[in-house]
Length: 210
Image (cartoon, rainbow, N blue to C red; front, side, top):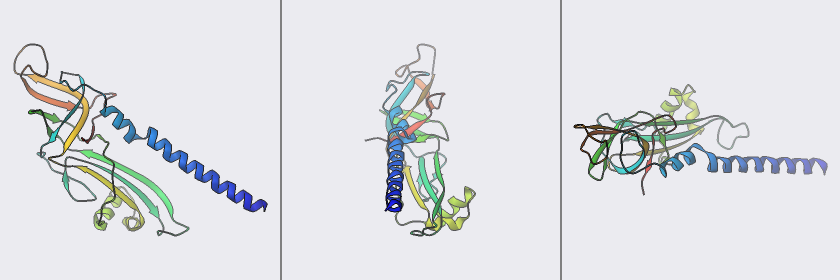
């Protein structure tokens, strides 16, 4: 009786711990912080201002290929849970969680104005999902690139989110504005070039717009 109660209590404690871990991730996880940044920032483009702009992505000059789907994109977000052992096996253990996010510089068309999203890394708030059907060879290459045996891919879990040319996208960062001539720097003063870049405290953050 005592052993059964101890086991039951142990299972309950593990269940509570796992639930708390999931809730903490939902409330404080990196994607949540990224989405909070995307509701801040100004929509008015001023030099060195913190902005959040919404527009339509234009195909980049340098294509970025999403590692798990093989699709061309402007940004991707991957989460991979790498396991050792077969699915359903009592000896199956999680080795590592791999999170990989990348963008390529691309143009965002904002109310007819071209804005260059200028960077190669960003917090991609788009939630990754499983790819169906799986592309096992791409998964094996991904696992190997991160220093693990590619055979582990078959029994591991992979999710990917991509943002592609033509998508409506929100971007948060710091605006840099170059003007054709002297004068006050602002959105409607005839800028020659507008960029959004990362800055201390304001990493490039992007997501799919509603």
